Length: 361
Image 1 (cartoon, rainbow, N blue to C red):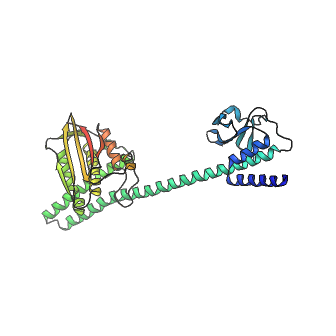
Image 2 (spheres, rainbow, N blue to C red):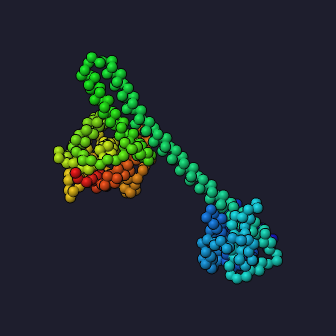
Image 3 (cartoon, one colour):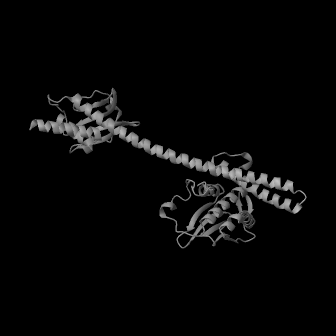
């Protein structure tokens, strides 16, 4: 009978060590040492923290050990350092007064077992943390690759288009009307290129002196008309209409370039989200010394899990080569810098509406 129990205990201990089942092994050690309760503390970067406890009064053990406990060896009634391959991996703390280990028990054997189990558990946790970090790094790498692809597209496309337009204009220099059309298209492309460059610099914290925000009176109708004209190809591809409901005398205090980026982001998102053969709208009015502008498109509702993340940086949409995932967060930052703000005011009644506000000129 005694031999059977010994074999069972040995098998149980081996299983606990291999599986990292520290509570089971701790109960076994406390029984062997004759201690009513105790706990195992593991080394972490910040100090020693409780890893497992056992016994009726184990809850009284502190969640971490103070520095004065870190000087081995301890008296038998306080605990021992747990060493694995010559280095400390944790501490065994015993409670309930003085503990007298039976003569038949070899403390060094039990402590070695605890240390091996603790090290195996720590190794398992480190592997899990490594897998999490590796997955996060992979996700960040993929996001960075997509972001670089978008930036490359944003920068190369206007340059390639500009080169093509200039070559065509030079080849037909006698056709003044054709040259004029090519130059108009070139200037529009350069405006978009300029906005893309400034947004790119701002996203990466690169502040050029000549491009620092300079709030001035801006006519919203004029800016809206210009942006809608630039977005006509995208509207045509999706067979969308875009209505402007802005009074001619509506002026806001804003940095013109960054307000263009904000409106381009909002209108671009609306074009992508709106069902084909429908319409989007840009409207604005003045209330209480503020100018409020709204961009609306059919759609919604937005899933609850996304509502709290709308204005935070997102991963680029892998299905959209123009997506950076930063449009709304950058728009929010720009409007805050100009003394305004932005919010989602509707999304559940078949229409998604973003509203921004600025000071009125």
